Amino acid sequence: MGRNDRASFGSKLGVILASAGSAVGLGNIWRFPFETGNHGGAAFILVYIGCVLLMGIPIMIAEFVIGRRSRANTARAYQILAPGTHWRWVGRMGVLAGFLILSYYSVVAGWTLEFIGEAATNSFAGKTADGFIAAFNSFTGHPWRPALWLVVFLLATHFIVVRGIEKGIERASKIMMPMLLLLLLILAVCSVSLPGAGKGIEFLLRPDFSKVNGDVLLGAMGQAFYSLSLGMGCLCTYASYFRNDTNLPKTAFSVGCIDTAVAVLAGIIIFPAAFSVGIQPDAGPSLLFITLPNVFQQAFGGLPVVAVVLSVMFYVLLALAALTSTISLHEVVTAYLHEEFSMTRNRAAWLVTGGCIVLGIVCSLSLGIGKEYTLFGMTLFDLFDFVTAKIMLPAGGLFISLFAGWYLDKKILWEEISNRGTLKVSVYRILVFILKFVSPVAIAGIFINELGLLK
Ligand code: PHE
Image 1 (cartoon, rainbow, N blue to C red):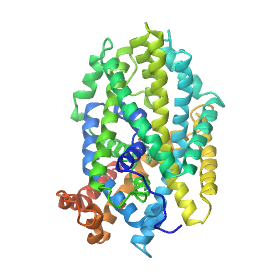
Image 2 (cartoon, protein in one colour):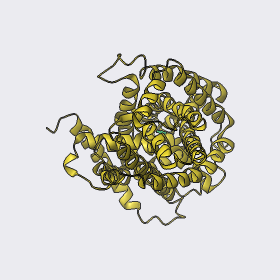
Image 3 (spheres, rainbow, N blue to C red):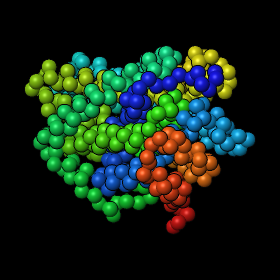
Image 4 (cartoon, rainbow, N blue to C red):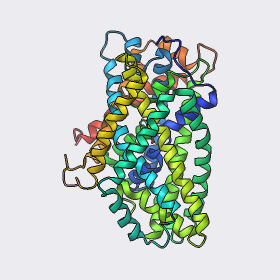
C-alpha cells in the first residue's frame, strides 16, 4: 500500500475519541483500582498523575510525531525515520507487547460479557460480599466458560479491525465514550453515598507518603503507560492515520485528561463500595468484579428494575470500552503483519486473532485449573501483565523518548508538533527538555531502583 493512500480518520473529534477509546478501557476501570489498592491508595494516585504529566503526555506526543510523520506501522515507522539503524527493534518490541497484552486482556474483556448476562438475569440480587467472591472464583475457575467469552470477544475485535479504520473504530468510539462517562458519574455518586463509604474516600484522598517505595513507583509508572496505551506503538499506529491538520499536543493533552478522569472516577466508584461491604482494597484483579455488583445490589436492591438496567448498561459499556482498546491492540499487530510481510489485511488479522485465542485460553486456564503452575511465583496471566505493563511498556517509552529527544531531527519534531509552523506551541521547549532528560532519567531511575542497584 502506498503511503498516501492509507486510510485516515474522518474528523478531529474522531481522532481524539479513537485515541481516547484506545486509552480508556479495562486499564482504567479494572486495573487502575486494583493497582491503587495494592499500593496503598492516595499516594499511589499522586505518583501516577506525576507519571502521566512527566512521561505519559510527552511520550504520547512523541509517538504521534513518529506515527504521523512516517505514515506506517510502528516497526516500519522507525525504518523510515532512522533507516539502517536498530531503532526498528523498538517498534518490533511494541508489536510483541501488543500481542501479549491482547491475549490476556481479552480474558478480562470476556469476563465483562459473562457479567452482562449475570446482570441481566438479576443474579446479583440477595448475594452477600462473600457470595460475590465465591461466584467470581467459581466462574474464573470454570474449565470453558471464560474461554468461550474470550473467543467471542476476540472475534468481535477481529471483525471490526477487518472493516477498517473509519467505519469501525471511529464510529464505535464516538457513541460509547460519552455514555460511559455519564454512567460512571452516576455510579460514583451512588457509591459515595453507601453506608460506611467514608473510609474508602479517605483511602483515596489522604496520601501516606511513607508507603511510597520502589514498587509503588514502578507500579504507577507501568500503570501510566498501560492506561495511556503507550510505549508499544499503539498511538503511533493510530497517528499514522491522523490528518495533517490534527493538533498533536492538544490531542495528547485531551486524551491524557480524559483517561485520568475515567481512572479516578473508577477509583471513586470502587473504594467506597469496597470499604462499605468489607472487601479488602488489595483483592487484586478480582476487585472490580466483586465490588461493583455490591454497589448495584446495595444502592438499588430495593428497585430491581433500576438495578438491572443500570448494571446491564455498565457492563455493556465496560465491554465496549474494552473493545475500543482491544481493537487498537489488534490493529498494531495486524498493520505490522499486513505491511511487513505483504499479507492481505484479512489474513494478517486472522493470524493475530488465532494466536491470541490460543494464548488467551492458556492465560485464562492459568487462573483456574492451572493455578498451581507458576513462573517466578506468578500465574501466566499475572506474568503477562507484569512483563508487559511493568517492563516492556516503560522500556518502550524510554526508547521512544530518547528517539524523539536525541535522534530525530529537530526540524521534523518541530514540523509535526507545530503542523509545519501553522500552530503556536508555547510548550515546545519544555517538551523537548522533558523528552531529552526528564522522562528517560525518571524511567531509568525507577528501573534501576527496582532492580536494587541503588540499595
Ligand atoms: N490503555 C488500554 C486500557 O486502559 C490498554 C492498552 C494498553 C491498549 C496498551 C493498547 C495498548 O484499557
